[in-house]
Each structure stands twice: as C-alpha cells, then as structure tokens.
Image 1 (cartoon, rainbow, N blue to C red):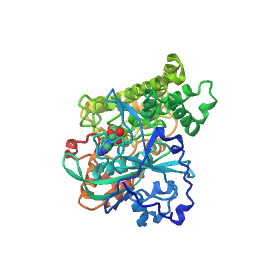
Image 2: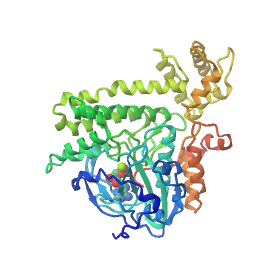
Image 3: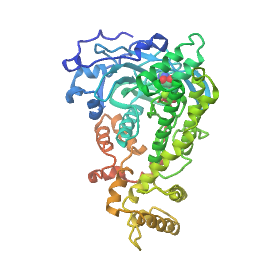
Image 4: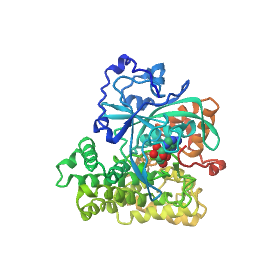
Amino acid sequence: MDVEAPSRPPAHLAGLSWTNRFAALGERFYTRLSADPLPDPHWVAASDDCARLLELPEDWMRRGEALQVFSGNALWSGMQTLASVYSGHQFGVWAGQLGDGRALWLGEVDTADGPQEIQLKGSGRTPYSRMGDGRAVLRSSIREFLCSEAMHHLGIPTTRALCITGSGLPVRREEIETAAVCTRVAPSFIRFGHFEHFAHTADDPDALRRLADFVIDEHYPACRDAPQPYAALLEAVTQRTAELMAQWQAVGFCHGVMNTDNMSILGLTIDYGPFGFLDAFDPGHICNHSDERGRYAYARQPNVAFWNLHALAQALLSLIGDTDAALAAVEPYKSVFPAALLAQLRAKLGLRDERDEDGELADALLQRMAADRVDYTIAFRRLGAFDTGIGARNDALRDLFIDRDAFDAWAERYAERLRAEAGNDAERAVRMNRANPKFILRNHLAEEAIQQARAGDFGEVQRLLKVLQRPYDEQPECSAYADFPPDWAQHIEVSCSS
Ligand code: AMP
Ligand code: MG
C-alpha cells in the first residue's frame, strides 16, 4: 500500500533520534512494508504518561500530523516500518511460522529511560497475516490500551500504549465492528517465538546466533561476560519471567493466551487479548473463552511459563551446546518463582519479618477466599485496614466470607502473627495499600468504556485511564470503580485475536 512520502518532521520531533537497531539486524528478520491507510481517522485515547516517556510534548495529540502517523497514514522521517517474523507454540502445539500479522514496527527512539520501540497494532495485512485481515477492532484496542497502562502503573513489567486512533472502517468479527490502531511502546518486542523461528529455519544457521547476540548486546549486556553467554541469557530470561509470573499471580492477572509467541524476551507482559483480572478468587479461572481445556487458567500460569522457558531452551540448544547446560539455565525458575511469589504475598499480608510459616498463612487465607468465592482485590484491600486489637472483629473484611467461623480462626492467627512484629496497624496499612491495589481493570469497567466508545463517546476511556494511573491511591471520588462487579460481568466473554 502507498504511504504518503515521509513528511517533514515537526520541529520537536526533529530532535528525536531514531536508532532503529532491530532494523539493522537485516532483512532475514522482517519484511519492510508500510501500513494500510486507516480511512478518515480520529483520536480515541492517549496516554499522557507514555507520551512523556517518549518525550512527546503535551500538545502532541492535537497535531493532525500525529493523528496521521499513529493511524499508519504518514511517516516521520527516521521511521523504518517493518513487520517481523517469528514462530511459536500455540496451546502447546508447534504452530510454525507466525509473525507480526497486524503489527507494524515504526522504529526505535532514544529516550531518557533508554531506547523505546514504537509499533502500530491493527495497521493492516503483512506477509505474516495468514488468514487474518491485519486489523484490530475498537473494542480490543481499548482493552489493550487500558491494560498496558494499568499494568505499568501497578508496577508490573509490560509493553506500554501511547494512543488509539479509530475509524469507521468496518471489520468483520462475529459481527461487523470498526477498526482501530493501538500504538504500543517497549524497549523490545522480541518474543520467545523469534528464537524458536530461527532455531527451526535451516537455510541460515547463523541467524539464531545473530539474534541472540543482538539481544545480549542490547538488552542483557551483563551476559556477554559470562563463561557461557547464551546459557546466561536463558537464565536471565528465566529470572525475569519467574518474577513476572509472581507479579501476575499476586495481582490476580490472567493473560489468557500464554503461547510462546506471546512471551517477551524481556519478561514484559505482552499481547493483551482475552486477559482478565480475577473478581471472585478462583484458582481455576479461565479468562479466554476459546481456551476450552483451561490450559491457561489462572493457577496454571506459572507452570505454563516454565513450559515456555523449556521451549526457549530448546530453541537456544544449538548455541548453548549441551542439554544439561540448557536445563540448568531454566532450573532456577523452581526456586525463583516461589520465592518471588512469597515475597509478594508477604507484602500483601503486610508481613515485614520473614517466618517459615508465612506461606502457609497466606495459603490458608487464599483457600478460604476460594471456598467462599471472595472478591480477590477487595479482600486484600480491606485486609490493609485489619485491626489487630484483642477482640476486634474486622467486620468489613469478615463480611466478605460465608464461613465466618473459619474466617475468625484465620484472623486470630493473623492477628497474633502481626502483633509479634514491631510496628503498628496504621503504619502497616500504609505499606499494605502500596501492595494491594484498590483499582484494577475489571472486565466490566473496560466493557462500559467500550460500549460508550462504540457510541462515539471516548470520555470514559480517558477517565478510566486516569483512575488506573493511580491504582494504589484511595481516590475516594472514584470509589465506584473499586466496587464489586455487577452480575452481568460474569457473562462477559472474551476470546483470542479480535
Ligand atoms: P495472538 O495469539 O492474538 O497474539 O495472535 C497470534 C498470531 O496471529 C500472531 O502472529 C498475530 O499477528 C496473528 N493475528 C492475530 N489476529 C490477526 C488479524 N486480525 N490479522 C492478521 N494476523 C492476526
Ligand atoms: Mg500475539
């Protein structure tokens, strides 16, 4: 498709330095192409915080030129647009070549926080689109935009989202919807699947090494000095992935499609599709309607990540040299993940000292919560206000449980544990409120913003973004966003690739 000739960069962008290091890897790794134009685009939403990361000035969104660039209709000079090729295991089965089927890499810019790649999602067909149309609908773009920014402000590693532009262009899904483009930002969009791809392509055996060297040099420089740099890379990715899983589990996030092509080599949350945050605590919760067998159920995520790391180990095997060394590099997952999760749970329970029985204390609470289907986020937030005084009933929390006797028994144990620590309830509450968010992107909140956006009112997307930018703050005027989900939330169905 034709794209406008590169326009003169606006004055403020003339200073942006486009480094485009991924593009320098060579054409083995991607296809150069431009976006399909998005007809008559309009702004849907923008993240001021992500704009600051890119050092885009506050009025950047008002520029018609920016609207065209982030819709895929124009380029700024310095951008080098391309779609990358990767492969992957989907639902445990080797799927062969996949690739950026609807994403377009615009380039990479230097920022004070390090280099950032900018990517359009939903910008039209690429050589990797297979049967897809290369588009994303407004609904899924709003979900990705809001959740990317929500996760960032929760302190969870993630790709970011700069903006969404929309259009009346019809897109066929189960019904006809309209197209949107979400602009994503990350230090790198490289996935486990990129490594799997080059491990499986026989015609250029050196490509895998070039990719691994690139990732080491640009993102894991400490591995260069290790005795076995490729094993060190695998171990570093293992470490970050384990820490990410602990954060997902602790906040009650379900990704929904943990295929190896949706696993970031930097340990970022990537590719928001049918994700969901737990409402009632249910370890077996399946957020992806298409995941009939629950492969990616909430409680399975940590094991799936470990499985995916083995797929990465397999892909790196020819570089690492022997199976034992590759297995040894992923082995630390077994200790790093539980330790990271326990640290998260201690923070959620407000425990400052470390005791052997802490894991058991947390598990006992989670079991009660699962038995009574207690709202995960509300329960932990209320736990922050726990009164350790003798005879205190902690009604706000207690009322969430059906089996009050069982709750009281646990609460007694918890109160004793807290009383044995130095500190007081008020100080602990402040600490716990930094670990237990009040505001998360519940499905029904996203759904309400989407319904209004589909009717042409984008105000709720922007309001919700603002609330989610301060998830740990009380924001009393926004408490409705922290309420229990309405009954209809149980019937929201989200599935892959919309
Ligand atoms: P996902 O599991 O949603 O991350 O997507 C898996 C693969 O399908 C990736 O290679 C995507 O680029 C591709 N894909 C998903 N949706 C579309 C679409 N509408 N058009 C083209 N490719 C798509
Ligand atoms: Mg994907």
